[in-house]
Image (cartoon, rainbow, N blue to C red):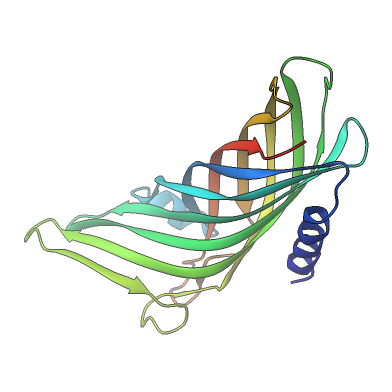
Length: 218
């Protein structure tokens, strides 16, 4: 929660500051899956945890401390989850979060036509809603229902997702003094998404993002 309040405060402060701030929209695609804490489950259920493609989008602020050092803060909506296939059915679970990302970043070559900027940081997500879609292979019956945080008879889910993130931005300065950025991000969840109602059945979100950013002003 401390990270959430800190990131939100910095985002709001940077949004109202006129100097050293690059603000704009971000949008992109992601590929997410889960990893179980129990190694035996990971080995036995290889058909569980297939990658699920999703999307994300929101606002980004780049708060520059110097020509090469900045703090990147994103406020966005993102989808995560995984696909699964078993003997008699297959389906997917989709988790939808409102998410704050905060990463320290360095521009390795600030005067080049294409600036390479690696970064490292953390994220926290707040559960908005989730769905389960499943098809019975024998009957062909398709079902879709809502996932509840605490009320499901077999599984329960945490309201928060939080973890570490690392990535790199490729920044393309534009003639109109705006900035196009294409970034690649990897997230590793530190909080299990499932509450352990089934022995060993705890999993973590792992996601790879492709992010597109366009700066609104210099």
